[in-house]
Image (cartoon, rainbow, N blue to C red):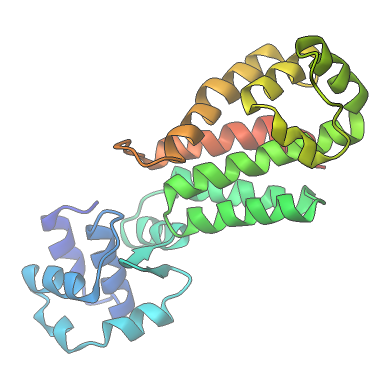
Length: 245
């Protein structure tokens, strides 16, 4: 978020384009979807009354992919936030922009089409600033990667351990069969058959799965970029980079 004083100073710089000024106004809205009327009100408040004569909607459409239109208004994408941060505010790239790039890089390693689509959705959500959705989709993609890995490399060992824990377990034969087991139990079995280490499992279960569960249901939980970036980083380092190939 930009302070009122900083926004006033930036909006009146002579070297900035209209596009950059509109992007700054979106930054001022602190990641909340903003309607054109909201942006014009903020511009007027900060002495840029001439903005009321601009076609702000057209400016934002031309600014893609730095801005995205959601049902409730316009919002900066990860690329847009990075542009404002590095080019207009002189700051380094955000943790979330790095997380988005890292997740995007892992897409190339995923051969399974449906799994790749989940990860693509996660990247798209990050770029649109949809933090809850990014958490959910990235987790679903990571679990799908683990399902595929076990199916092709550890299926016999997995079924033996699953039967040991539950005599009613019906041997998995396809990736879809893993849907009948809770994700937390699935992770426990991966530790037992040495696919995951105990510390990795604890991080995935207590942090990533816990956050995914909180984001998958309506709640009062507030998310910040650092929290989501840490979630993505854990999944990239411990799942996608190890098991997606």
